[in-house]
Length: 187
Image (tube, rainbow, N blue to C red; front, side):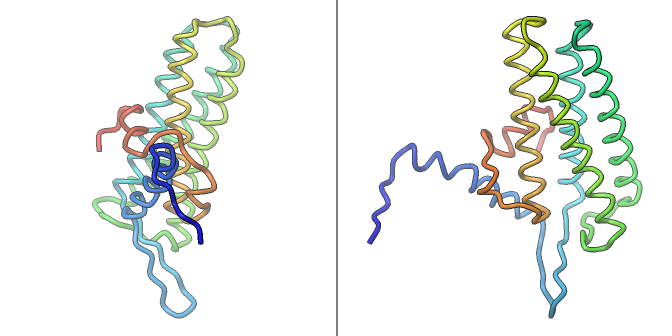
């Protein structure tokens, strides 16, 4: 028989899983026979996309006019443009809908394009941070790292929401609410 010892460390280890479980309230999953339908909250998808756009703007401002980071600023701008276009297409199609069914191929494509653009942005931001070196202050590096951590959390909870990965397999360093606050998305 295993006895679970409640310690602050053990409780804190479970926070990312609990945060992920809370995110699942943003969708419903129903199964009828062999068909499973995922209904997503439109506002939640839009909030994740906005968090990505805010992350891009923040990192771009942190990079500033540092010559060595110019190629990354260009890549971030391209990722931001792709995310903005994906969000616009999604929002236009969703209109005033409160929820959408993710299992519809049209919606799956729209939602997946937002997730893909956020993932691309996270990769580009991570590459820019790795290239910073002594070109920027440690404070700028720290701020960029915080933005990246928040962006990775958004990716983690978004993929968990879609059921494409396990929350426990990709633990986050902050909760969804902390990540959205860090990225300037009020929830």
